[in-house]
Length: 410
Image (cartoon, rainbow, N blue to C red; front, side, top):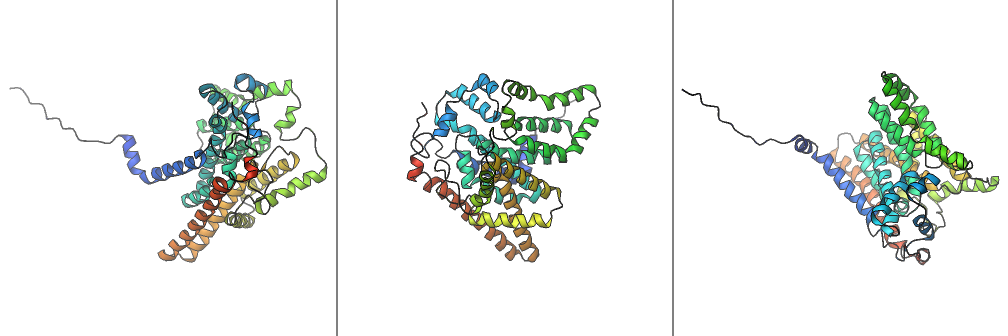
């Protein structure tokens, strides 16, 4: 008598990816919504706003030598040039979209990195509010949708903060390799060497630990290669053009007198809080860079870090602010995009402090807690609406703005 085989039954099962999505649907939804909002802000009417074509500065970027030969001759702002070379290779030279898209990518990177940093420092709620404030700010929209190298500065500081946090929280060697590659790519942005030096000193224990952890000889060799992979390109430029060393350090070829440098130093807080830059191609009139709500949050953030001035975070923000201010005052070619991400990290601390004080005052009253969160959310929404009106309505219809965008990308 033959033995009957058991009947096979098939039950529907979820794959690992589907199970992970079900378990994390709320974070995935928030990330997806955030990505849609950021993409719509950075890509909306990118080729037609303002009407008329490119500005003179954008036109100079459009005709700059690209590809390997162009990068060998001038490797500074390497990430933007690589993105522009790839775009020109696949889509052809001259289009407004191709010229401006690298700046959009750098601005998106700045927003994502700043969101991650604020989430690690202050939690998800503050990260959403502060990064909406940063993404919709007029300065981020101006620099992130304009074909210039300022977008590199906009992304560099948040990327450096995030890489440092990741390095301190993870002890895996592959994370160390990735962080060193990021730092090496940031070395091609003039002036960033000072920030990388500060960050390396603060992460010296982690870097020494990674070297000791690499017991196998090939791991040590790989660590050295990853650290020095970008150096030959820089050394080639320094040997051919020795004066480019000053450019790499973020310093001008010829230093101004003391008074003009002091004026540029004093113009930093003035343009942030009171009287904006006079540049119709990149800004509207003389409006301050920060709106009223953002300015108040920045002041609260400064007060918060002054009370905790011994913390490593406060020390690094202060050192970064001083270095950025010194570079801007010494070199007119370096703009405020170097300091604006630091300003919005301070604004995030101000929002966090405001929320914390309100929620501590009403620890067990759900109605008042909801009212506090709702009021701050409404203030962020009003600030975003003001900045969006600034960029998408007032600035492109300003006659002074239109007069600067007259170059056709052909």
